[in-house]
Length: 234
Image (tube, rainbow, N blue to C red; front, side, top):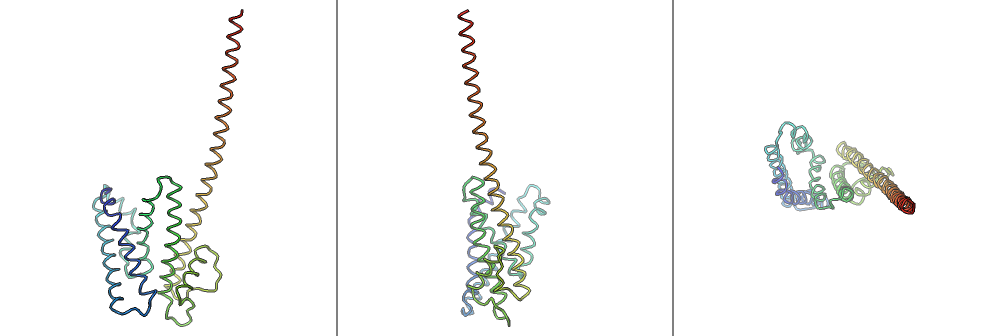
């Protein structure tokens, strides 16, 4: 399992990036030639098949397949519903996983990588998904990528100005997932900051305690030397 994950790490990241490019191109350029549209669609399906192979291999290599299956049930759901386009984009978390492995071994460094990379990727993907769902529908007010990325950022940060909003069921599903993702990211930032503050306070307290202990040891040594000198004089 570990060897396979190490071997497939960068191919999966490259495949996820290719998937994102193939998914984004027709949305960002709606007048794209049909030939290129079909090619992009073929690329997304090929990458999806690659993810299926990765899932099957990891399942077959797991020591406890039943436990691994239940632990990675979300992966199976995503793979089993390839026609639900917003849900398919969740496979792009492979990019975040690779970013995490490349980050500092320090926990705070990994969290920072997750938050920075995850926030940017989540906003970009949500903007693409909602634009794909909303464009062309009567009464839609999310018709450009600029409006979509603005909506994604305000929704993810829970600001929600309300000047742009989805009207389709698929667009609202993207909005719900984005809200959940935004809250999770904010929670991660808050938890990381709290952990850093607690660690800093504990570190300062330990430093003060170490100083006091060292001072007490020095006082004891001086008193011991003084008593020994008096005993010698007697």
